[in-house]
Image (cartoon, rainbow, N blue to C red; front, side):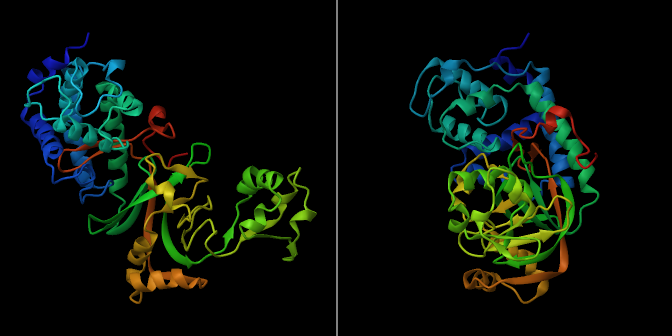
Amino acid sequence: MKISGAHIFTLVTSALVALCIGASSAVAQDDAVSPSEAIDTIEPILSYDTAYNLTLAIQKYEAIVAAGGWDKLSRGTYGIKNGDEQGHVRSLRRRLAATGDLDPNIRISDKFDDEVEAAVKLFQARHGLRTTGIIDQETLITLNVTAEEKLAQLRLNQARVEEAVSALSDRYIVVNIPAASIEAVENGTVQRRHTAIVGRIDRQTPILTSKVHEINFNPYWHVPKSIIRRDIIKFMNDDPNYLANFRIKIYGNDGEELDPASIDWNTDEAVQYLFRQEPGAENSMGHVKINFHNPHAVYLHDTPQKSLFGQNRRFHSSGCVRVEEVDELVTWLLSGNGDWDKLSVDATFASGERLDVRLKQPVPIITTYITAWANRQGVVSFREDIYQFDKQGRVALLAD
């Protein structure tokens, strides 16, 4: 039987737990620090720092579980927001205080005030939700995930981080699929973070390690056969001008361009041909493709669909990874070449020139699957188990 939420406060009082809770509570109450600033500290998600921070987080959640977890919030909590005053706010305050989003020393009341709103926003940011400060359906569902489930998630992800850290170099890129984010890391600190768009559930971004070796400016897009089969055949049946509208040309095995009208779009005939999209504003890779050797034919790239980066669920691709502010990442990657800066990268984008640049110093890249991590401020983050790897208990992500 679970102990009441109020009883958690008297039981979870060890020095370590108080330290962890105090850190995130201070962040929630400090108007000068946004939720994103509280989460995005300089330590990489794959690092000895994160492994240690996860140890502290695990101890914190072990104490919460030992105290009986937290009470489930009722359906009446849905929709409450700043300015509301009702009994459900009291339960919400206890739930937020249990994980340090709200300072547990603040008096419990029925009022949803600025402090509660800041705590809700911190909770939402920690879980990759829209930081509205309102208890919407997704926030309520996430609040009601049990402490036992959170603890199991932390333990599994600590094992993943510990498995990865020994093989890291001084300079590398990490794509964390569940967070749909990218870190550029140098000398043990994050130099840049980028919002990303990764593979949807039925077309997953693969787990891999490789090295970025080449930048393709204003590239052609050679359409994968899987996309021809799954998408383009359907699009052409719906709109015979689809290929022309998106400047996609078809080539036979002899290299000759084919007329789309000569192909039977009611069959899989099109899969045997080469489909190539010309460089330009409509190109699915935008202004740049970032190449690394892998058996999955995936890569990082720009995109013309910038609006997708504003979504909190960014699982839209067919396996490749789209990068927000990609010019900044390209500049960082080419810094070892000595003759590139952001101005020259942006100028090459704008010129439309087809140009391939090999990195003088290839940069390791890791695509991984971390759904729980913690930073040095004691803030613990979680993400949805989008590919169900947590449910499968997968630790050795590169194992067959």
